[in-house]
Image (cartoon, rainbow, N blue to C red; front, side):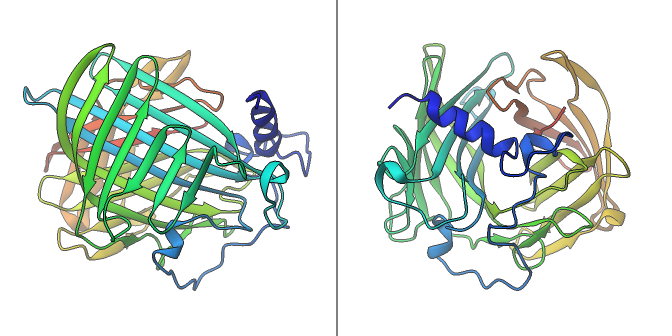
Length: 355
């Protein structure tokens, strides 16, 4: 199959081909209307392992893994593995070549001096990409996120490769999943746009990665995000800044700031205690300020941030390990590992879209 067909279909989807309008509809078309698709509403009761799988009727979803790794010499590395599922229409999925689902994979590795990113596109219905629940397996071509045990997310193998990099990691966790937002209903705007969203922030990763022909043995914390939605942004929202943070005291923090063409950004997050207990963070509880910027791919990107959560006695500075962690793909964005300093140390990941 020629991959260009998938590229064209995905581009039409993300540009809002079903509802053309003269103005841009948010980042990557995610602010376009999607009335025919299943809406995201409060009160969903999550069911596992079924919700680890694909959700027919919703417009877009993703399986998103990031890992903050070190080698024996203390050098920092970051790894990203993502599988996106995009529905071209809301009708029941068809088998074989009649299938109307496009799959997109992103993979990247980052060090202090190097950042490599790659992408894959695939048709649904023909076995080139997909997600199975039992045993759990998410894949696109030979990029795989696969369960190694009866617990679908307890013991995982994660792998990807491209011409300049590859990695093979084992991810282990015995900790429970975290439902983001209001019991998994994660609001993205005052107008009610939302996703269903849960995470596994307690993974511990170990394995090897190869960058430009050199192999490193690495280990460190990893984070899985699972989201699905039909219209996650409003037309006024141009992109987001997303943070996943592993604090040295065992707590974890997820924050996101949805930027708008007009008005203040929509800001929220989740505090995940070392014991796994969660607390939703609202805008008034968060002080999030971009600091130093770097010129990346012709854009000014805030690669240093100040984050304060006074109620948790947290005041930290976040610095990109590699300011040039630009994902120069068909849908471009910035994504890379960060280090934390201040009232606590730690590591994490930052994603910035729509710049």
